[in-house]
Amino acid sequence: MDLAVLTRYRVQITDALAASLEGEAALRPILAYHVGLADERGRPANAVGKLLRPSLVLFVAQQLGASLERALPAAVGLELIHNFSLIHDDIQDGDRTRRGRPTVWAAWGVNEAINAGDLMQALAVHEALQSGPVAASLLLNATAAMIEGQSMDLGFETRTVALDQYLRMIDGKTGALIVAAFQLGGAVADADDATQAVLRRLGRAVGRAFQIQDDLLGIWGDALVVGKPNASDIRRRKKSYPTVLAFERANGDDRATLQQIYGQAALTDDDVDWVINLMTRLGIQSDGRITVQEHLDDAAQALDELPFSTDGRRDLENLMDYLARRDK
Image 1 (cartoon, rainbow, N blue to C red):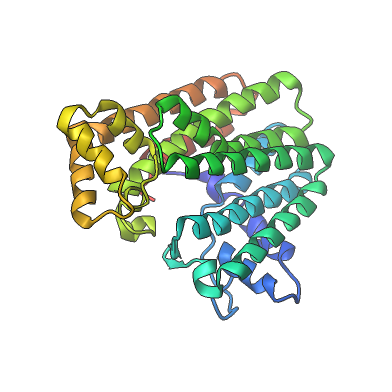
Image 2: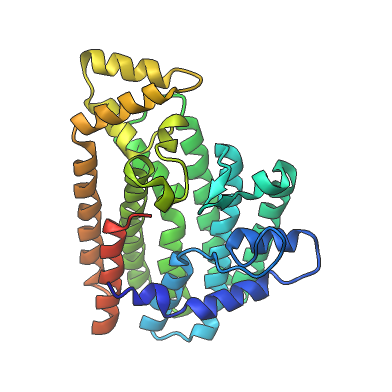
């Protein structure tokens, strides 16, 4: 599949990302390591992720007539905020690996990881300001929504969650930065309010599709491909999409057993296997794939209202199709 949105701007984003992290302070090599520009010894590495969010900023800006030069700082700022959140998420979730490499806290300790994340957030705002105050304001608002969503996610671990509560959580934790990607592209192109509203709808639909697919991979994905232990969301008792549906659909003895397992301080391998088997019996994986496609259909309807070129519309449709079928 041609993923032009993810490949077209990769060199510019990577170069600008590296420039934003330059400096002699001890934390700078840690930041370069986390984003994938360096290894643990500070040597150059090629482990940068998909760069989905900054690529969307540049894509939307270009489609709406803005220059890449004006949009690039906002794109880099968004990628830095995303990475700041991952550093702190790994601490909170106790994850020791990300994309097949040790997490920052596992390599340098919790205290230094917190400092590294805080510095990355400050650098992100500095970058976004170079694209203008509107871009910086959008990024700060999205950051606040993302942090609130993360707090909701942690709070959900100890109680039953309804589907609408789950959707509100992912609209913040994941969706806020994806919505910001579309709206930052619109902001640097001086898009009017009506266009920004459509971009917001598009971003929310893509964000939901992306997170639900991620939740499915968190249980049924290949650990070697995904880059984290298989079924780690179940072991942490996180209320991901499959777990929320399992609690809604399970009855009788199945529901009682599910509540008993999620009420434990720690889950055994047998507990995890039982939960996965229950989810399979309830048809959650296949229904989850249908739900992902429904959100992508909503995104396609919003896309039809935007003044994108024919090639641009095709490129974004290809990206959305990839999001629905990716394996990592």
